[in-house]
Image 1 (cartoon, rainbow, N blue to C red):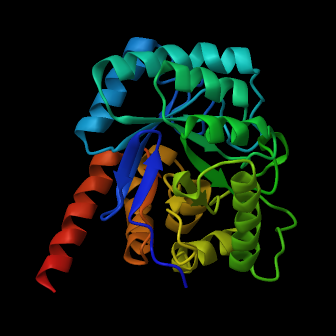
Image 2: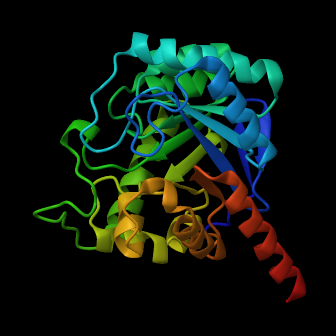
Length: 289
């Protein structure tokens, strides 16, 4: 068993993981499942980023392509046009860590030149291995996520007619992530810059998502920072009976609390304030014990 990660190296910034941290979601897309179309204007997007920071976000994750099931793929030039001005505007006002949510090296490179210092790749370098080379040369933080299918072939977790099968989903995901991390390290990426994301909702059944959550400590024991994104997803809607994504924040917080209690350090969320208040309560309870 490896020691739990206590920091994450993102460019020249060492992000402390002594306590859980939150990644504020900023989708500058017209079609994301929860907030699509809300932040297409650069000024509106930047102001929302400032709010996320004031609410307690350590990282702002900017994405120009939706990864929801069935989403259209967006060319690199359009992703850059959507994300680069927003990243530049945030960087002019804050030294917060900024990640670019993309599977394309060209988009990630433009984001880093604009001030981003983390690459959040839901394809873990499979779609464009140039992302691994870029992470190696820049020292940017790198999120490697497990997914079974790209968005155009994906379904929501509660919509599968034939549910995805796995002998043991936790072992399958852990093995796959270990392999992708080894490939990244072979290409020159420093292990200290790599965070691992089991990919909740990406090609998993409802049962498999909950197994990954309930056994998330296995990923913590791998020794790298663990990055989880459950916020407002369809499997939470199925569990809670809440159909509207924007109303799933309280249920999302409860899911985050379960993972935080198991040692997960990094949470990608929509409502940072509600999650941050939960974290403060959790820390207060630990101090009383």
